[in-house]
Length: 123
Image (cartoon, rainbow, N blue to C red; front, side):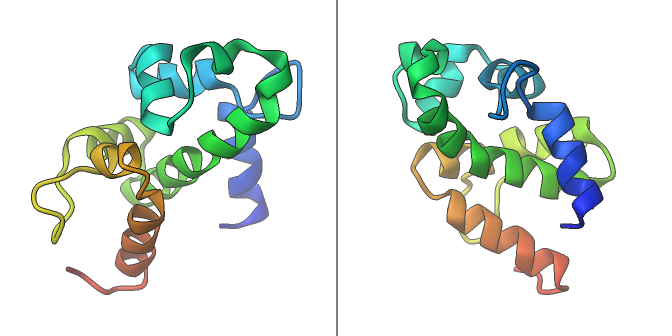
């Protein structure tokens, strides 16, 4: 992703008061509650709000944000990317969506799939 793309992602998902990603902004973009987001990324709900856990939350959110940014770039629209992330089954994963795979700790598989599609390899 180009530097411009990264700055756009940081602007959309960054916390106004720190250099970390904002769980609230990611949750709003996905249309989920903070509790649902915490479950998705594998952290406790209270961890999302704790200032001492900002680095841990940032790390957990980074793959979700990378997936959304890539999907948005490919789909041409943030809303389409969210719909794809939550509802479109990924070929070869038994009807599972990117949301399902991220929840299972397989965000690396989703990123690999998006890279393959971007490179012209289709499942």
